Image (tube, rainbow, N blue to C red):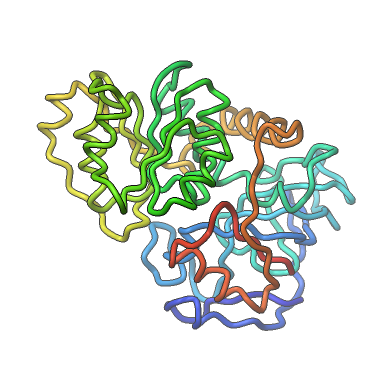
Amino acid sequence: MRAVLCKKFGPPETLALENVPDPTPGPGEALVDVAYVGLNFFDTLIIENKYQTKPALPFSPGGEFSGTVSAIGAGVADVKVGDKVAGSSGFGAAREKIAIAVEQLVKVPDGLALEKAAGLLITYGTSLHALKQRARLKKGETLAVLGASGGVGIAAVEIGHLMGARVIACASSPDKIAFAKEHGADEGIDYSAEDLREALKRVSGGKGIDVVYDPVGGDYAEIGVRSMAWKGRFLVVGFAAGTIPKIPLNLALLKGCDIVGVFWGAFTKAEPQASRENNAEILAWARDGKLDAHIHAILPLEKAAEALGMLTRREAKGKVLLQP
């Protein structure tokens, strides 16, 4: 089978496409013929050895996927050959076949296309965990989403809208704002054209923002904390800007706000039942058309570097997929 391989740490251009032996499912595992691979910003970090997960070389990037079960190992009862599934692997999915523990798989409901299912578990899983378990977002609260047109950003916009929040999409261009509004944002702030601090004050009527969802980091993080409402929740999701900010802790004191970490991967291991319930909710929403799970582009395996480049340059609106 063919696999995208990271054989040495570096930018996407250093990846190789090679033939490797087909995997065999072990006890408790299923073999999945991969239909689509969902790429995420952390894939651009993991191949440069800049992420908290550090797999041994060589490895395949790609932390989520969809496909069809083609074989099962000993002791497997939860899935059978022919089942359509989606999975979260952390890495290793950018290949034609993957052997994976069945606990990391979820069945794709009838009526949900595999290309949609491939990009749901991590981005929408992260955003639902952030807004539901970590922020305890309530109907009628104001939610500001930074980087609102990216993978996790647009997921937060859609889920925030479904949860009844007033969603403020913050992004770096008018077309990205328009895209977020198409997916449920009530208002938009183009922070390349106006001061983010003043704009957040304006849209909140001076009261501050109840929940700020920040996958960007950099200079925008402190602005987000300074814009919190009393008892607001600032969600630390990621650092797409490349810089991990240092927040003055007196801001948390003065605002009476929470600075809350969001680590979806750890959540899935620490609270597996809650994670499974979240996944079921996400897949049902997608099946029923309540989540769009917008796909920016689908590229073949041999164009993995081009696909990851869309993420590093922050061009993608929604998900970028690879198709083996």
